[in-house]
Length: 162
Image (cartoon, rainbow, N blue to C red; front, top):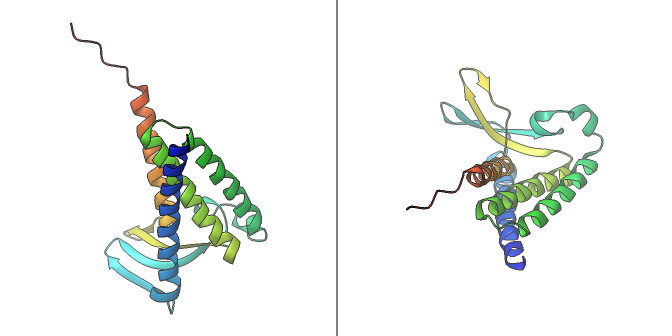
């Protein structure tokens, strides 16, 4: 369990660090002053702040209490790390670490500035996906790995050759 804990913490720390470095670069270097930067016909850098949960849900309610959501995310991240420490499946352990690291990155934003910093804007013909960040990518990748682990576990074992 101790070896698994260290590896899960490593993945969480990697996701957290990459998220925080990219947010720092966006806030203090790239978006000084704030503007829209077109990278491709479907990808912009656009600074935004999310006061709610996923896709800005409940932002009116949670804007006044960012610490509550940050504390909740911290508790969830700790639970995910403990879960990962008990996992034997490598994909599941990495996935849980990535989810925990992403949650911690967004929790720190919320604690420090009252909102999560978002800056990646995917769009197509006037339709924009909600702006997101590196923590959201880590969380999505972690969920994908968890799904792969679950599907692999659900596959029947091959029958022995005779």
